[in-house]
Length: 380
Image (cartoon, rainbow, N blue to C red; front, side, top):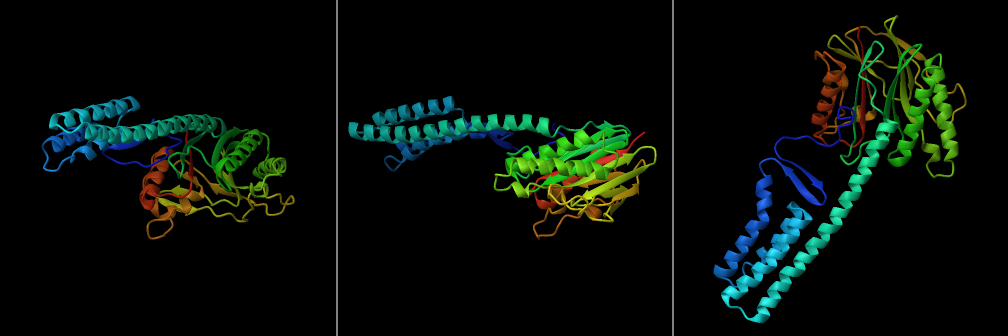
């Protein structure tokens, strides 16, 4: 799954994450951050006992539990809070402050510690719930969008799925690859919209493809089967506000192993790219088609089937608009034809990894749409 879904940014040096309501830091800064509460307690004692201004160390004593809640576990933060209260009392006794001042100082530290621990508890509960939801999402992804095998028939396959948001594992983009009596068939597509409605529509589209890929004699028949499945789904959810907008763009692929040909059937999706000998060309459809699920009468907006040569050493690159509509800081769109040209690729996985890294560099890691990538290449 690590190859198929890689969400979030990458960087060097320390890496941070929020787990259980505390900041987990890996790298050379981990020990320094853990020592922050201790340093605040020591600084508070020094300033309060020996500083030129009375009560100068009280803010540092109060800040120690707050810092502990950020970098330690709940138990560690609670121990720090108790320690801050004890230190406050001991310092006041050491410098000979009256009982009233001692009680006020203790209450200051105790109240701030209580607020910090309360927030810590709430954030920790939310973190646990988020982890549970994320685990469910990962199970759903494995069921709805399982990664295809690295090889299907005489075709090597590589897929990548990059969500726009690190917290998400799956969105409305999809792909699938199946072996059939007619050759290796593949699909890439993008559902209109986001969230659970898009995921449910995507599940219907991929399920219809897997069911009909081995039965439909032509790609057009396969597309018509998917169209009917999405139309039935739209009718089933007809009482929902976005029922009429649950459609998907797609490209259907059929690789003929014996003929050395690849057939494409376009359904309103960005065209694929052929990488051959360092050149990248766009495989534009001769007759553009409409997206699937629009409920159009049979035959209306149906694309033709285009055939291209496809031999060993060629790479068929299929992407969603998360790639073609990615922008740099100047607003320029990413262009695979120029960015991937004159590069020597050895495997389908190398093409996919290079594209992901290049798009990330192009956008500065600030993508605003999910990105699905499917790469096919003939192998012996």
